[in-house]
Length: 495
Ligand SMILES: Nc1ncnc2c1ncn2[C@@H]1O[C@H](COP(=O)(O)OP(=O)(O)OP(=O)(O)O)[C@@H](O)[C@H]1O
Ligand SMILES: [Mg+2]
Image 1 (cartoon, rainbow, N blue to C red):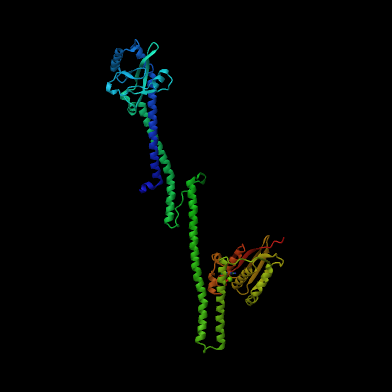
Image 2: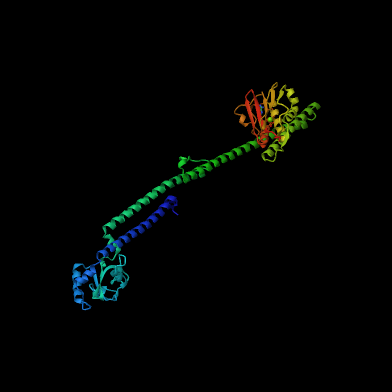
């Protein structure tokens, strides 16, 4: 199909055009028909007594018969007076017996008497139409009078009021000034309303086509570019506005999801790069030591050999830890780890965990202090997983605090939960790095330079564990002043 006719507007224009043409035709026909009927009605009413008057004036009946000479005289006079009036004499059965027009023009032999009688009785509604002697199919308005001799019916004087010249309805109306004017008025009104309808529809479709253009731009930009919407006061919003709003909602969601997917993809690449790097580094070192051992076996003394082997085992240990951590994180991410909730005492757990760091902290002269009552209510959580979190946080605190620093572990009892807070007075984390420390493999610039050994998975794992418990972990820090980590756990409700 031609593209021109594809738009809603052009389709509507075609439909409206045909609709209005049909409507105009119907109206014009109705108008012409009713005007015609009205004219006939008036003409017939005006000529009501015409036949009777003529019959009386010309004394057409005598001795029980129609007086043909007088009839002929009458015909002759009317021929000169008004040739459009046709006069017929009928017998009582309706047979045409005499007339004033050329013989070959009279086709009928009989006239149906029903309309004639209705006219005479004055019972029918005007216009009453009787047979046209000139035409087998047509009926015309007439005036009729019974010809009587005393009480007996001799025949009828039948006068056709509209002659041959006015046979055609259109000819007749083209002669009529009022009919002509009102026909033009109808045409004008119809054209005007058609233009109004088109204008209105243009207004509607314009907004539709703006929307559909925007959708097309959005589609062609592969769901990345969205032209600004034509905003409107929502109070007056109609269906098209609602459609626009819904589309923009949907489009914005698509854009944010596409961005999210892109972000995830970037993350995934980084992750793979980091994993490969972190796996390769200890592996290369390990290989280096083992190869040296093999190659220089005879040159090295026992102490050196042991030193080399110890370093190799250390790296092996690091690798094993890293792989274990990655595996753990993968399981947490895949929601394979479901926390096994049980009631336990946080003070006990913290004391137990601190035991493991006793040696390390005393070596570095870091003091660890607790700030809580031992009768803090039990919490409901997975003991193993929470232990993992606390271990990570204490390990970090020790690792990122210089010798002689201090670590404070605090528990605060709330209405439904207990807050765990681990504070250190170490190197702190720069404000711009703070939001990233929970990302996997993220290590601050500083800790990376110092190569203090971490892989950057500890906090990512801790975060996932706390989230699995329906809570969240927060970090506050000031560079060179220290860092605080804080999370809540629900208390066990004792009935
Ligand atoms: N208490 C802290 N003080 C200062 N910086 C910290 C502290 N805790 C964490 N960070 C910073 O956040 C980074 C991420 O910590 P995370 O525990 O995830 O990794 P990591 O300790 O380096 O390695 P891992 O815990 O996997 O052995 C650390 O590398 C460090 O730069
Ligand atoms: Mg850590």
